[in-house]
Length: 139
Image (cartoon, rainbow, N blue to C red; front, side, top):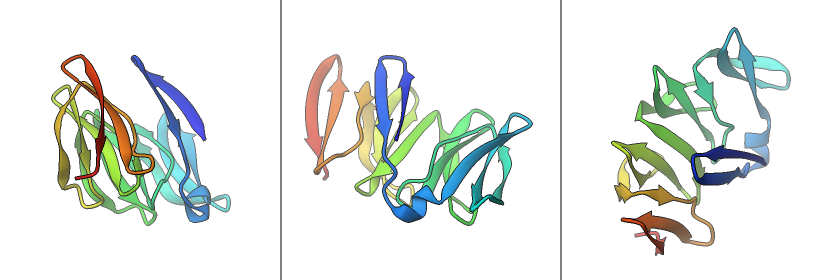
């Protein structure tokens, strides 16, 4: 697990499977890539990258975020202002200063209307809409 603070948002990243844990993020010349068992499997070509969860990792290129699979294929284009790890099949993404949720193929599942979101846990996620906290479930 790794913690980070993004504005007022504290997120705890959970690695979902043993397979995800095999991929180690590394930095080389201010770019990020991934190694598996000490061998580079995805070259350091991203401006930033999160760890793998549910078989994909959020990566940043040219100030936009998307997702790659363990083979390095871009499975969701880098078109978001921010992107979080997948949890229970959905990931939080930021577009035009609003958070929403996408699925593993990049389909918008829960609209980009929230000021703040959290990852899904036990089918629920905490959100903030127009300054009001709440909880949502998967649609």
